[in-house]
Length: 134
Image (cartoon, rainbow, N blue to C red; front, side):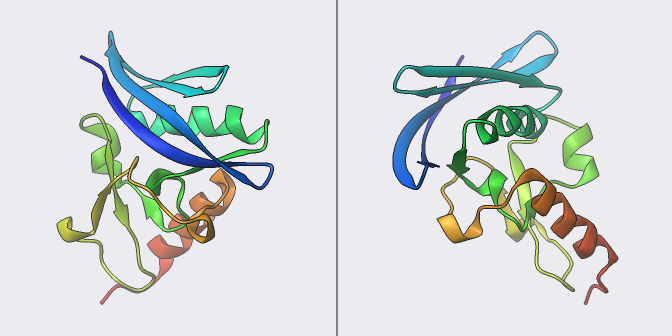
């Protein structure tokens, strides 16, 4: 069964709508991106890793997905990455421990100001890991 999300994206400064289609393919998870005549497929051992592969391809075309999985402060725990589809990740706050209430769907919408490149997102996650948690 295929799941569908409608997401916004920025293409050279203009906001567009795109379709995201999710499905399991064997032991992998597949994301199909559709925007007008552009179709891109990415796969990974979970949806978050597939999203990273998709983002690499989209960033080459100056396309920025405006969804939580592309937000600077959203990242899954190692347990989420290793056990399941990783469709959810934690919305992280420096110096604060992440709790279940902080989980968000990686395809929920985010604002343009929340978007970060893959490198910026991972750098935030590394800083969060080092930050002292209350």
